[in-house]
Every structure is written in structure tokens, then in C-alpha cells.
Length: 256
Image (cartoon, rainbow, N blue to C red; front, side, top):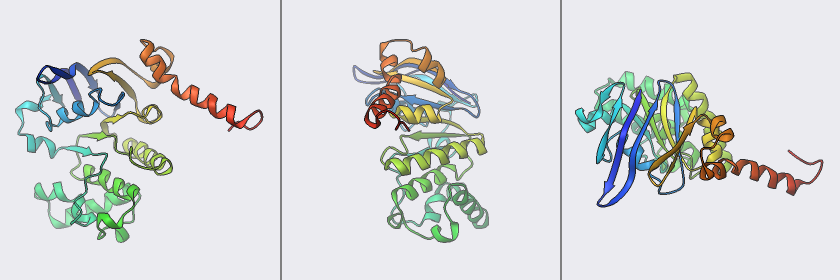
């Protein structure tokens, strides 16, 4: 469904993404994982041409995206931002229906779609439909952001650290909701995060990036069991070290 071939982004002599090649199969969630500045978000933005590549190409469902008008391409790709990006002067209904409005949907079709999506993200349409973003909690805003990204029934979803700014309990709830939604919709998605546990929980495959390069790609188990180098080994050893620290704090007989 999504294919990157030698995708590269340079700013002057600085290479942000260096000949990155990978594929997300239909119905698969591929997580881009790495430390800050490794090129994850730039890669995501090149997939919907918010950033134009210096070299290489992106194909979605077999089509080279460079041949499509950028605004048309984006109308068929769901994009979820970390900062949510809801329009503050619009209601929840108006935020979710932005792209359907541009596509010329009828009022009745938009109303049905908005209510369907609010149900999907576990928000009561009757309560939430006419509220503005300032009247919502952070978790509710992020749910509306996911609903908005799904509004036009896109083939693919791109998510840029969507839950990173939330408290741990809300973040866990939204991770579980996303896992349910992607299963229900057979969603193809590329999900950017620097949170290892989130990557392990949500990703069918994980792409580890460092300094703009692909270091290793595999299933969560493959990366845990067979890290390709010391960098990946240290990264995927983090949950084990944290679990040991928790056990040490609790003491004998009190392990969770």
C-alpha cells in the first residue's frame, strides 16, 4: 500500500533522511521509531508532500505520488498531528467535516459520517458534536483529531506522535482505542513515535531510524530477540531494565 524507494531529504549539505526504503503492506501498521532528530517526522511529511523529497519516490497503492496534485493527495490520506491541530473557531462537527466539505459531500452524508466516527472514537455524538475544542479535554481533542483524519475514508493513515503530549493514563486509553480501530477498519498506517513501549504495542513491524538512516526493520519480537547492533540492543533492552527497576523498588513478594 505504501512504498518508499531511496527516499532522501537534504537541506543544503545536511542530510535529514538518507536513501530510506521500506514498505507498509495493506492493513499493516508500521512504526517509525528513533530518537529526536532521526528523520521520522520528515519521512512522514514526505509521504503526503508536506515536505518534498530531494531524491527517491513514494508510491501509494502503486501510484507515484509526485504525479498527483498535492492537495488531491492529502484529501485521501488521514493525518494525525501530535498537537491535534483542531480549528479553535469550529465545532467538533465542523472540524471533522472539513475534508468531506471540500469533497462536496451532502449535508446528510456528512452528518452520518461525523456521528459514526464519534461513536468509533468513543465520544457521544449528541454531547460532543456542537462543542468547540476549548471545551474538550486533551484526550477528547486527540480523539476528535483521529476522527477528522478518518472522515474521508482514506486508504492510509499517517500519525505523528499523536499521543505524546498526553498524561500516561489517557495515553494508554488512546493506544488501546487506536489498536481497536485499526483492527476494525483494516487500516494501513505509518505511526511515528519515540516511545518504545508504544511501538511494541501498536506496530506490526517497527523501523528503527538513526541519523536519517534505516538501522533495522522487523516485528517487535524480531527486534527484541535479534537486534542488529548495539544501538538497537540498548534501545530494546529499555523495557527489561525498567521492569527490573520496578521489581527492585517493590521488593520480594510484591512484584506486579
